Length: 187
Image 1: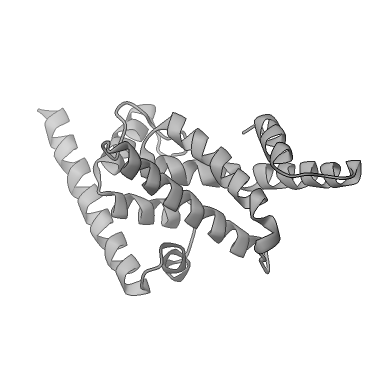
Image 2 (image 1 turned 90 degrees about the horizontal axis):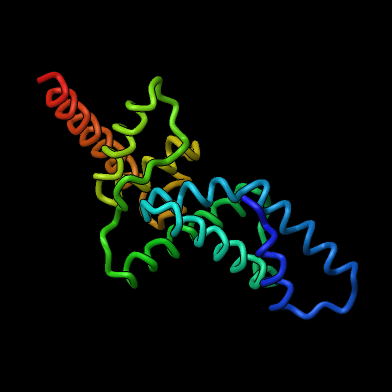
């Protein structure tokens, strides 16, 4: 992800008195973009199902962080990452609600899968996209982000038991969906 467009918008929204402040902000933007933009993008894509909307949400989340930077304090990068992902999920849900559209976009596939063939990657991603949003989100956070169930519970504002239950149901639904697909393909 490139941060060029972010520089102008964030810098325009804040008044800086010195070049040193602008340089520090530029360095901070580079750090956030380099370290977290891929995670933000994948979380937004998991919720919206749209590459274009996910890209827009990455920019919005980073801008939101920098416009609220003085109000936010994090002990470490993990807490910052949790805030960024929570904000990403909230903005993604808001976008879906305001647009009044379906939760997934057709023919858009995530580039981050570890399956052997491109066809299998597409099949798995399509099966994931057919799941309810609540299942897609926990699968994404657990498998793609490597979050633990208690971290997912914190990010989603729910209990650890709910997260565990959703993960189990998501796996079952995914397994059923893929086995049905395999049966169709073998006929």
